[in-house]
Length: 421
Image (cartoon, rainbow, N blue to C red; front, side):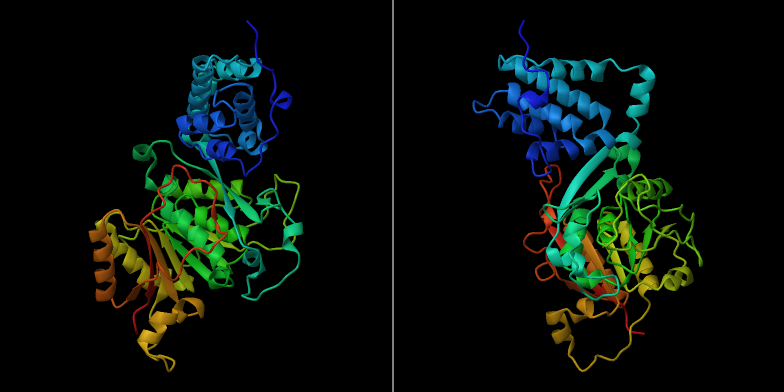
């Protein structure tokens, strides 16, 4: 029985982070979809030498080796690859056969360790505009050739950043905060699209989850400080780990919101040889926040300029508590209008762009009645809510590459001005 070439070097051009097969693998897209994309590399659409070699490149890619997708996913992908080659009557390379055998013959101890959700990595690439890194943490702008100074988390060829996270493979076991959600990606894209809205500000994120938005903010060096708030200790622990994976080291987190909560400064990833000399990452505080039992004084003491939240409105029971936390964080605004009518402010959205405190909520439209409840409850609490989906949007050239498993439609963006005091 003749086998195909043993290594990817004999057949395939090395893949990079613009390749849809590699991105699909790093994001743990459906295995059948990845196999189909690999097949597309063959002129005849068969799972021959080139698709097999390309899969081996995916497995051996540096990011994939350091932060691999979950072992069950890799085993299934390799099994489907073997079956695809056999079905197409193609020879199977020694390397592919060995990789498949290795995935199914690991020791019980190794399999148990690797099957834990803490080994379930996904990597995403966010393309950013040039001026995204020209917005400094003090709100000013600069042009200093940022693109020539990069770290392992930035793609110098495309002005992009890499975000690697750990997620739980089972939604019902890991909790909603240990999964990536479409609204979190959208919020990160808004950060990259409107850097001056976020630059130089103290930012509090309610329901920080796996940390996609926080990582984007920190990698771009935009805020003056970040407060990451969530109510689940497992979620906060995972977020801390995800920040560290991306070179944002947090020295612990507080068990409950309180004045003087842990101030853990963000530093460079000590495991990487390269340092980002162009930008100082902001300080970060991670704190557990139960929005059903809000400590108003402690939250107000955080004194954020901007409150962010993504996909925290899926349960109508959460709406009052989330708004209570938002109100406590922002406090009240003055009655003075600055000489402008409310309609002018609504049209220009100056309360977002011009340093007035506000909150930005990004929500998937799963249950319209829940969002209606959110808007009405916000009005009842004295907020001024505004749907800014069409005007505060993701700019051309900004976006995550090939989010195959993430539903990207029907996402609503609201801005909330705090109540008048």
